[in-house]
Image (cartoon, rainbow over all chains, first blue to last red; front, side, top):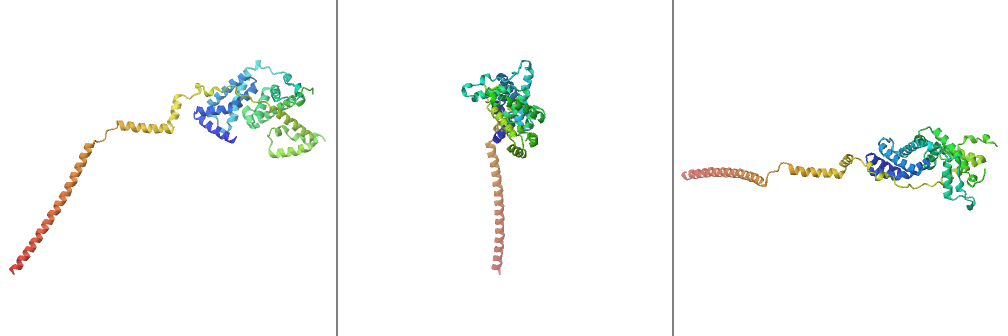
Length: 188
Length: 162
């Protein structure tokens, strides 16, 4: 991880001097993380891909404005967050969140009540859709991208207390939705 | 024993499970969990939820971000040229090119014949100086010899007369 940071720093310095190849390498290192974050947030593969493209274009254009190279990850995800929420606001009338957790397709009686990894993954995907956009964003940044509370506050542009509130509420909802009894299809 | 009496509210288990608690806080929380079944259960449920969330599979990006091949992201020609100026190879090429140009267009140096003429003139001049010095030394020696001879002759003549 330290080596990666050192190399990223070197690539960022080169990219800031206009070295396109260095920026291409930076894109190849970060595109998967950014794409997966956007995929979970937007819940649409094409949108996630288009927004990923926008994110890296904006990152390239604004790279000279990055004041601290070591904050590149947070800075990149802040761009991704802003772009994603910009799209979500535009698409808001079309966006209808599911009324409840639909696990009808992931209840395998033939496995003795235990979910297979793919089914568990689908269950988590469904559970994440129960959250509102802000809560889901907080979960994605903390649990899947590993940012600290203060880094999340910078990315989301809100106080740490708000970050914690969103995340804790989300965890309560997920705890209920992903309880073993729920996943086994037992009534609680 | 109730949670309130055991001080369970003072422990932020979500912060603990998410790795955001500092070391003293963690030690204190762990000491409490060791004696509090309710908090142990709360922590176990949280860990199970986080473990379940971690099973979400990360997806491969369907296609590479177009940045790599898209020409619109290429810097302008003058940016590339400006960057190139600072490369060592380009600088070395400039020095060599400048040397060739100077050599080609600068005023030509004197020819070989002119140099030879200058050398010959210098040699002639040096030889003349040496010859003049030699002649002067010879004249001086002859005069000295003549004077000495005259003195000897006069002395011999005086002795004969006596």
